Image (tube, rainbow, N blue to C red):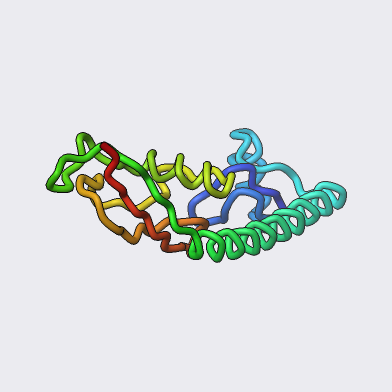
Length: 149
């Protein structure tokens, strides 16, 4: 019996897949527990259409991510911060500050969790900050921390 899995089932398949299962297994286990539904021709066509749309959306997102990574690679951010005479900051520059600076410069929201700072910046100077734009796509942006008194 062909069924469409509504949830991941170990040893059988992942959610959304159309699989062939033994009639008894499908009728007595999968269907009553709402782990699967019977694969009717209309429902199969609907699932295939959703899969095509999801693949197209994934391609568009990857293209946008490449464009954004290229833009961020050319971006130089200057973040003013209060600093002492020796260049040490009163406070620090965090990933949230870098995210806000990117929004001000490029009007693009980047989640602070996607900005890879090993630790907050605590001194003035130039820093190269890596930003994960999309799965497998990252960019390096130059951040200049300027001391403002």
